[in-house]
Image (tube, rainbow, N blue to C red):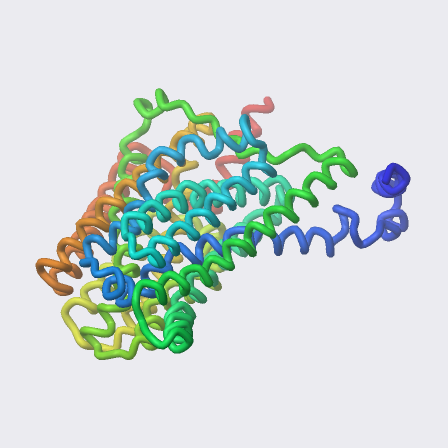
Length: 460
């Protein structure tokens, strides 16, 4: 091994000929970096696949476990509750306690164990155990996403990074899409095999779904080995999140940042809980088959997979973030109004929702960096994720209760009201930004020009 290291390290620098003599397994080779990229992308596949298992099997979960919609939506709330707090500590655990390699493996194990407990709850006909499984699953899920991004920065820092983030997001959406379209079919196969439906059929289906989490854990183990090897061969340090969380920074947050938080909570609260309940909505209102309903419920994720990198590039090139967010929110409101008050083909409304969701994610999250000093970014993003999870937990429970007592029309009005709150916050943000001379709505060209001027003044 020492000879191999000397040979590899000795051939790093120097001429292009020396670089070409590097073996294919060397961390600097393109093939090796592509392997690492693939492992990073698949790292979150199992987590995103299993996150929406309840949505893909809503009718089966409610029938087999004999629970109402409010109890069903609690499965999503239990995922979000631990992340109200963990968003502040995930980066700290990776940087100071576990390190990126061990941290990623531990969070992947939490995801696996959580899914197994979730499946066992169904097998044993114990809904409280299913809720406990979602809690454990949630502890690992969001922190694993932080670890995934940290690996990306460590290996692909520079001009490749935005593309890598886009590819990771696309793979996450593919995981959600595959789940929506395959879990119902797996349930029917298991039902055919056992000869009956019921909680045991549901439990076995969820256990089969958990294989994706084991696959992602395998990716975490291989990635840890390759990262350790690159550390030896290249002297590469372990990746760090760079997050510095100081809760005392909250008092310094501007009105613009609080409005960004409000947009985030109200908008995502009208998207994710809706997708969680969407399958039965399309079956009952539009008389779709179970397979058709699953397909249309997943269209948001299908569109998001290829469009997120495209919109990310578009927003980077043009700027004008507030205008993009405004367009996304108005389009989402139109989508919910169509679904609530018309019988138009829902493919139209859901396709619009998919485009709007992709656009908002690319335009909203980068705005935090424009209104917060660099040393407060970790706190700001942690707080944003924290209140997003708090909002999702509360809105999920409220949506389930509304559906049980009032029906789907009232539920769609509720989601439309959430989007309206988001719209009001966007309009307020536009005027606050304009009156305070903020740069949230600058064009990319103007921002780049002023940054060059500021850099020149700093040097002189």
